[in-house]
Image (tube, rainbow, N blue to C red):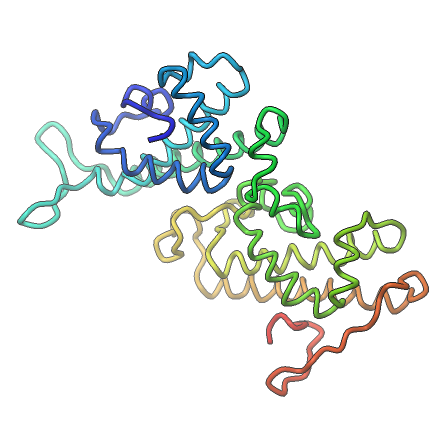
Length: 326
């Protein structure tokens, strides 16, 4: 484990004690450290924070630098809460030669499902919010956390037309989450490559991405292309189960399966289909309206050349579906 050594440290960050053995949680904590810390902030920054923790005799309170201390404590909170979240199914059962059995005795009994659900939701919410706190801290202190600022994990977000969570959030509500944004960037790359470049042309779109847009270019980017990209990316994120909805806000799907996620996303497959179909129509409408805007102001877009769009499978293009559905 990178940021935790004993059960007492875990207890400082989790409101409820479900085991007295760190060994029971070890594999789950390591999984959370890898998935939600190392994979997110990069191996080099993770190594720096781990080294600071070890140098402080594995006691985060002994770390002198206030920023690094805060980062390590946040990492502990992430690993503790999401580690427990992962461990809950194993903590509730025992396995032996007679099969899998629920653990209970005369002094205690198994919790009701709604109680288990509430505990899971609480652990997930604390862990999720802690990830946001970590990313916000690291982004706000690029000189202190220079390994993160230079990491591929962070820099990959800067290669797209939409470069930040708050910008994406203006067009598709992810609650301003940096974590959600980082996890759906690979989908945004698909939308740019497979849809936007074909509609606007590779060269023209690359110019829009690599320069600061002004005048009508700015209107084109901010009122047509960015909304189209964000909405189509959001649709893909729903379909590929990267996000679920809570109170109308897209959140990262920790559970990964709509069938087992009823407590946090009470939507049927048909409702999901209706939502994504409407998002696809809206997203492509923005992109097609952008083309109309260019054609009405051709003199203001000297770098634009109408691309040749090949029909696929003999199907005609549909302005409500663009190329996205083909």
